[in-house]
Image (cartoon, rainbow, N blue to C red; front, side):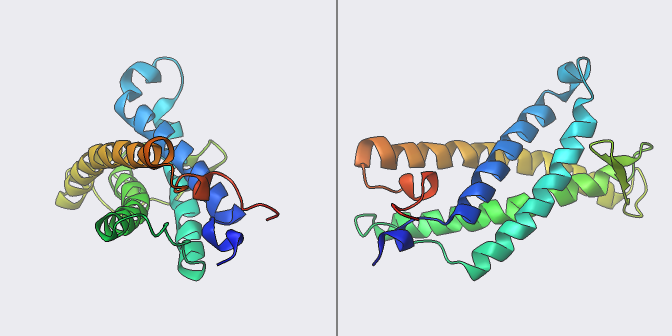
Length: 180
């Protein structure tokens, strides 16, 4: 197998690190929006980043479906390979579910949904206090904490593969293959 097939391509890497940085930013903004809101418009920025994550995640999912992930090294046990695949598909689901649940319950608010103050995003036809809005809000909060926990596990596993096992798993997403 060629070296290029053992690494993610530039598009996959760019989407991975961009969405990762946006998600981490949004987790911080979501958890600390009250104190941060005194310094800058934290919640409108949180919502805008959510819309950006949704758009980029749909692109990333389309890219992933048409460009398979490189295989893990043969030294990675089968159960770890299955766990990694399951976690990655869970992240794809979260990258879409989190922004959608936020969009649904924010649609019931009195303020317009703006994309970085450039233009308004259409709202869903939902009413404040409705079961769908309450469910979307609850799901958004629970999924946020789930995402944070899975993210810690994801980073921990990547660091374990890089520093302890030294098997090249992290470098597949970190840099391109030589000459690529």
